[in-house]
Image 1 (cartoon, rainbow, N blue to C red):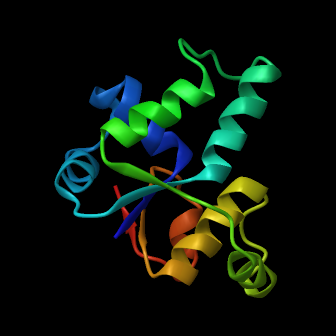
Image 2: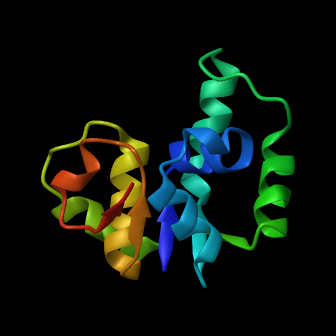
Length: 125
């Protein structure tokens, strides 16, 4: 099972040439690919403050995920419990939540983020 970080999701949906070969192959051939609802939240916030330009709505992106067999992972209380135990390595709350979800659900994270690999989680890039 894999969990796409926000950057991997955006690259996969809109700029596939930005993905590493390993990331592209992992997403393409994974039996279970997921994206956190937190990624959509992050995208919506960045879009609303002008840090990210979108050619579609967040709802349309979610529909694109469904058509690509990427499931949306809800935020569960157990994910939030894991956040409390994470070392204070990453300051980004969205990335901390994604790491907590991956740990809790025993998923690998597809990301180009260079800080996430410092956590006890398998990273694919």
